[in-house]
Image (cartoon, rainbow, N blue to C red; front, side, top):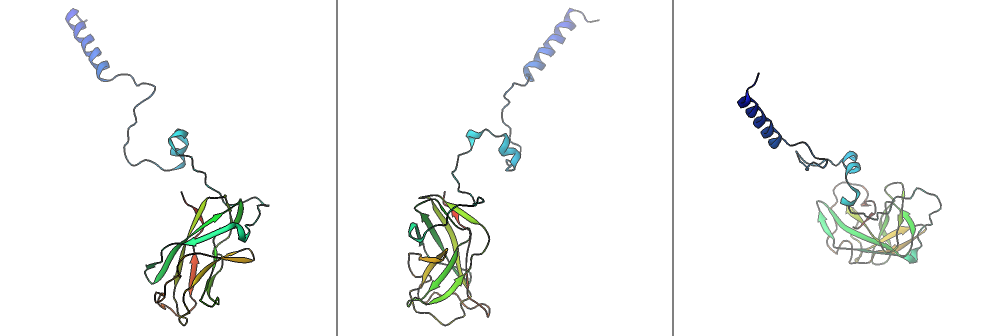
Length: 198
């Protein structure tokens, strides 16, 4: 049985334990034990306001989205750079209205006379709904040039439905900058899928 002194000591210990270990509140402080999870559970439990809302056009899955007309599209390309044995550039595409194009662009490369010297079929299935005045980009690669040198400048053209539009910009590539012939075979002209520019 505790005397008054023992009771006082026991109370002091109890009060000290509570002061050092308060009861958890309903809003605990965030504690990070490692890199944040990027899985669906983390996204679902986070407050919606903590993530920016991005209007991202999606791959068309509904029938009836009209194909883009040639006269409502504008395409241009940027700098031409060497990448290993290839030459790369970025095409930027903008539409004047809501319409769809192939998810992977088909391309043609023409010489100074307008003759086709290389082409690329669409590299994959799917279509993409373009939103008016939103810019989309695709990375383009030219490699393995084993054909005779063409007449410069070379013009990229974007294949759309049954037609094509010229991609404005400098020659792709510049005179004297053709990629080397790495293996016997066809010239490689390919493009990545369209992605909206943030």
